[in-house]
Every structure is written in C-alpha cells, then in structure tokens.
Amino acid sequence: MSNYPDDSLTLHTDLYEINMMLTYWEKGVSERNAVFECYFRKNPFKSGYAIFAGLERVVKYLQDLHFTDSDLDYLRATEDYPEEFLQYLKDLKFTCTIRSAVEGDLVFNNEPIFQVEGPLAQAQLIETAILNVINYQTLIATKASRIKSVTGTDPLLEFGSRRAQEMDAALWGTRAAFIGGFDATSNVRAGKLFGIPISGTHAHSLIQTYRSDYEGFKAYAQTHKDCVFLVDTYDTLRSGVPSAIKVAREFGDKINFQGVRIDSGDMAYISKRVRQQLDDAGFTDAKIYASNDLDEKTIQNLKMQEAKIDVWGVGTKLITAFDQPALGAVYKLVAIEDDQGKMVDTIKLSNNAEKISTPGLKQVWRITNNKKDGKSEGDYIALWDENPQAQKSLYMFHPTYTYINKVLEDFKARPLLHDIFVKGDLVYRLPALQDIKTYCTQSLDSLWDEYKRDLNPQEYPVDLSQKLWDHKMDYIQRVRENVESLNFD
Ligand SMILES: Nc1ncnc2c1ncn2[C@@H]1O[C@H](COP(=O)(O)OP(=O)(O)OP(=O)(O)O)[C@@H](O)[C@H]1O
Ligand SMILES: O=P(O)(O)OC[C@H]1O[C@H](OP(=O)(O)OP(=O)(O)O)[C@H](O)[C@@H]1O
Ligand SMILES: O=C(O)c1cccnc1
Image (tube, rainbow, N blue to C red):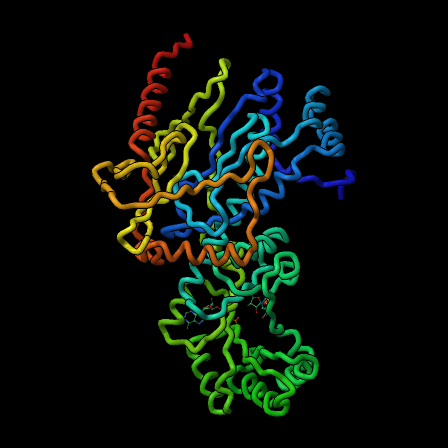
C-alpha cells in the first residue's frame, strides 16, 4: 500500500496545519504561547447533554507525537518545504499543557471541553487529531447513554462492528458505547484491548448450513455450554422456538439454555408469543434477545407495547450515530502571546451570535446546589483568574437572554477542566475503563431529569461569569471598531 516503513499518527493532520506551522516558523512566532479551546455548538441528537469520551486515545497520541524519518521523507517528496523547516519538525518535542474534561463526564454545548496551551506551532498541528477523536467518541458515548436511558437495567449489547465506518470506529466506538452504558460487545478485539465483556449468539448462516433450526441448534448445543438460539431464520413461532425448546429439553443440564434471539418481524407481537411458548414449556428463565436496527426510539416504543424483550442488541444506529453523524466540535484560538511576551485574547466574529467565540483562557465550573440533593445548577464559564469557589454568592445569567438569571448562595463549584499534561509531561493517571463507566453513571445521577429526558429536554444553563461576559462584549466592540477603521483604498 505504501512505500514507507511506518505509519506514525503525527501526520494524522490536515495539510493546512503543517502549512501554518511553516508560516509561524518562518515568521518566528512558532514558539509563542497560544491557547486553543475545543467546544461544540449544539448538543447531539437534540439531547440535553453529551458524555465526554476520547481522552485516553488523545493522551496516547500526544505521548507519541513526533515526526518519524519516513514522515519527513514523505513531506520532502510531496511538499516544497525548506530543509531547515523539516529539521525543525524532526526535533519537535511535545511541550504543551493540556486541560480537559475527563471521560464519562457530562459536557454541554458552548463550553470548553478540551484546552491546549503551548507553542503555537505544536498546538496548531494537533487540532485535527484531537477533533477527530473527541468528535466521534463523544458522539457515540452520548448515543449509547440515550439508548441506555430507555433500556434501564436490561442488558445492552453492542453489535455494531460490521456496520461501523471502518475498524477504528468499530473499536473505539465500542469503548465509547461501554462508557455510555452498554454492558458488553460482540467485538472480540475490543474485549482483548479494553477488557470490555464480550458476548455472542450465532448467525442465520449456522441454521442455513444445517438446513433446519433443529439441526442447527443441536450442532451448536453439542459444541457450546451457553446457548442463545437465533429463532427467526424460517418461521419463528412454528419452527424456531419449538426447535429451540426441543433441543433445550434433549440436552437438559448439558447446556445452559440462556434463551432465544429474534431479529425480524413485529418484535412486540412476536416476543409476546415467544414468551408464552417458552413459559408453557417450563423455560421461564430463558431470556428473549432482540436485534434489528434498534435505537432508543424503537426500544422505547417496544417497551410501550409491552414487548417481552429482556436483552437488547444494538449495532448500526449506535455505531454510525445514524441520526446525527457528526458532533461538530471546533478548535478555536482564544489567546496568543504578542511580540512583547504578553498574552492577548482573541475572538472570531460571526453574524450568528452562537458562532462568536469567547476570548481568553477559561475554566468551566460545574455548580451544584448544596440544598437540592447536590444536583447540578448549571455550568459557569469564568476567566482563568476567577475563582467562584471563593465567592459567597454566585450570579448566573443566560449569556444571550440575560434577563434569565439567578443568584445562588449555598453552592459548590468544581472545575471541569483537569490538568492532563503540564508542559509536555503527563500528570493525569488514566482511570480504568470500568471506573470511567461508573463515573458516567454518577455524573448522570447529578443531573435533573428535566435535562435528561429524551424529547425536548430543558436547556441546561451554560453561563458566562459577569467578568467574562463583559470581556467578550468589549472584544466584539473593539474588533468592530477596528474593522470599521480599515481603509484599503
Ligand atoms: N412492534 C414494533 N414496533 C415498532 N418498531 C418495530 C416493531 N417491531 C419491529 N420494529 C422495527 O421495525 C423495523 C423493521 O425492519 P424491516 O422492515 O427491515 O423488517 P424486518 O422484519 O427486519 O424484515 P426482514 O425479514 O426483511 O429482516 C426495524 O427497525 C425493527 O427494529
Ligand atoms: O441491526 P443492527 O442494530 O445493525 O445489529 C446488528 C445486526 O447484525 C446482524 O445481522 P446480519 O444480517 O448482518 O447478520 P445475521 O445473518 O446474523 O442476521 C444481527 O442479526 C443484527 O441484526
Ligand atoms: O452475537 C450476536 O448475536 C451478534 C453479533 C454481531 C452482530 N449481530 C449479532
């Protein structure tokens, strides 16, 4: 496929990032301190929240960030970069400070969820990979959480690998789904690499091979202890389930007859009939598994119809984020060192108020009310030198509709962005995946139901401190005046 001996992730970037690095390097600003922040503008799936995921992969990517000889050979062969610049790339060492939300935490639209501070050229280079990873994994963890919100305590199996957008998406999507609430995956590699429990039944091909449900189930039972039989190959009620029951009776204790899987038809009607058949045969503990293009809407609807389904297998609609294939997180420069060595905040204007970036290095504070079961009151974005923890009361107001406001007296504020790397050194201990999953559940418990409901959730407050809001308005004004004073004639 390639003439090059290695495939380092350092080139997993858009060409324009390296082109900008060249400009910064030629102009002597590549080592200036810069701050970029990553955020998304709308919660995905019209959800009231998102679940942050992707940090582990980003950490591994950054730990190994360096241009290999073959990366440089490739750039030499394709781009017209000066040799001295390639030498600069060769010597480049990652020295940025990274602050980030942690995996499994709740994150919301229009707040920084990942922050990079460090030499401009480096911070520019890593934009693409960071967005690539966080956009996808956060999207899938959120979709998984939405599906989990309707399945409750029913086991939830991830079946998406065959439909995912290629292998990386299958693997890391599965991990994100596990964080968001799935219990197990059919992807064996994800089990090996991440320790996610693996689970599997069998396909229609097994039955087709033996040409009858009975012979297929028998062959499986002769070779496996745990058996879940797929009963819809020919006729679920007249052949599939009766054959499964026959085999389960014949094998008795030799197998662990866990249940049957249905994969087509009207799953409410069929599952009820299947339940009756299993119960009548005395297999009251046998579970009914269901799969077939399921998502949170279908599952909720099936529950409403009192379908007798115990275990849910979900593939395509989860792993491809079917109803919203991109999160749309962006990476914006919010501050840069000037030629006097002083940090200057920057802004990106837009006609659309939502698209105007918020200048300056910031921290996001999650505000909880001590009086109301410790539930979240909202997020409060403040300039880095502010400390709401030290304040007696907190004035929170909507950044656009400022008449929506409240004053909190008895509150806690905890920072959302944690130090991950400090000047290139990893200072964060990556948690075990199970702990991330548990943390995700706890985080969701801290959110009022109004923000969690599937349909038309309330908008969770993501507010700016008064100081930051004033600062932003001041910048908008200043940039406008600057533009008006320009004269190109
Ligand atoms: N009772 C139900 N209420 C709502 N949706 C259902 C119900 N039963 C099944 N579904 C969903 O309806 C869709 C039916 O898909 P489709 O039209 O492909 O039918 P099928 O039964 O899978 O047919 P095939 O035999 O070709 O696989 C699936 O997404 C399935 O999850
Ligand atoms: O429907 P999804 O949510 O995407 O879940 C994954 C699907 O993959 C399998 O079908 P497939 O037709 O690929 O193989 P099979 O022969 O095992 O049915 C399985 O039976 C599910 O229907
Ligand atoms: O184990 C299963 O039943 C399974 C695995 C992958 C896709 N569909 C079903």
